[in-house]
Amino acid sequence: MTTTTAPVATSGLGILRASSLYIASVLGSGILVLPALAASAAGPASLVGVAAVLLMSVPLAGAFAALAARHPDAGGVATFVRRALGATAARTAGYWFYFGVSMGIPIVGVLGAEYVIALLGADRGWVGVVALAILAPPFLANSFGVRVSGSVQFAVTAALLVLVIGVVALAAPATDAANFSPFAPHGWAPVGTVVSLFVWAFAGWEAVTHIAAEFRNPRRTIPIATAIAIIVVGAAYLALQVVTVGVLGDDAGTSRVPLVDLIAVTAPGAGPLLVAVVAGLVSIGVLNTYLAAFSKLGASLGRDGDLPRFLGSGAEPGGVPRRSLAVVGALTAVNFSLLVASNFDLTPFILVQTSSIVGVYALGMVAALRLLDRFSLGWWFAATSVLLVAGLAVLAGPNLAIAAILAIAAIIVGIVQRRRMSRAR
Picture 1: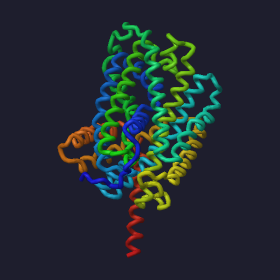
Picture 2 (picture 1 turned 90 degrees about the vertical axis):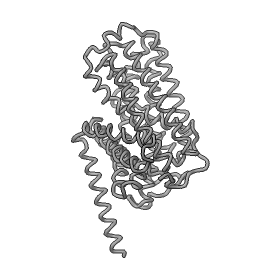
Picture 3 (picture 1 turned 135 degrees about the vertical axis):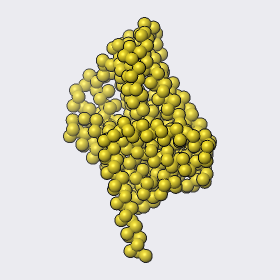
Picture 4 (picture 1 turned 60 degrees about the horizontal axis):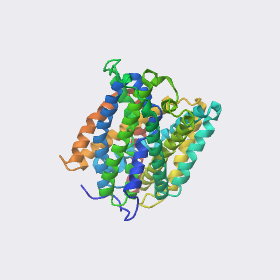
């Protein structure tokens, strides 16, 4: 159960660049709005919610790290599911990620653009143009392969962390201890809302599994990079939550640009420009990692016959899946056009994305229970995560409809493949 699925690159991304990819995939655009929304919902008790989600993310991240370290392949979760549950389940997981989760690509661009437009005081009609400008660099970097995009990601993540530290450092002197009392002004029930909000913020551990074969010595690199990312992301969100509550207090949820309000008290002139840079870097960083994951997954699905075979180019370690990346670009163009037609109503797209993520997590954790050594640390992580994901599935409810349609499509493709094989015989 511990053999790898595909050849592993003898040279590739080391711990620093791997960590930057993990950090970027998790420390996403949520830092722009979630701390303020959480503080508005639960007051100082929001710190308990953030800490709870951080603890809950540990088993999920640990289970995916254990799987990726043992079975590094471009298929990521789809490869794990194929080994444990068969071709149809693997195809379903692949479709959920490739077609469902990928609907989040234009969302990230639009979120970053909305923030930049609001900060610079430009007309909202420029949102589409700025969003395209945010989308372009990650596509360009990934067209040269994950080795190049990984180097770009290292620089982007380093700059992002410096800026987050800067926001916290600038805001901290204005913290007022009185804003932490009463600790739970609305009771403890709103802490559940905070947990629901931050589940989205701590999602992303599954994305890097698709580029695990690009890491140098995955067995060592992946667990270390995952641990680094958990610590860095957790510290960033907790620090932002503390200063958001301490500085903004009851006014936390009243602004579209809360990070600007945080530092306006001590550095009013630098606020808009600094946060605009943060918004752009966050969006580019998230997109850079996910595009690498989507393009590698598409190539692996082509290699395994779940998508047209011509997409299989670039699935191997070190390969550049430009054909798959082009398909992702086409899907992004369609989804972006739909966003424009809806006047940038993000809600339905977010619901499709998150419901697809829940499906991927569910199949991935069931596969982990079968692939990992029973009662090992990774196995216990997976067992705990199964219960957590079941709760997320209940919350998703009717939003799983699109995921169900993609699952039906995966089943139909399997039936067609079997009939073709039967005729060939």
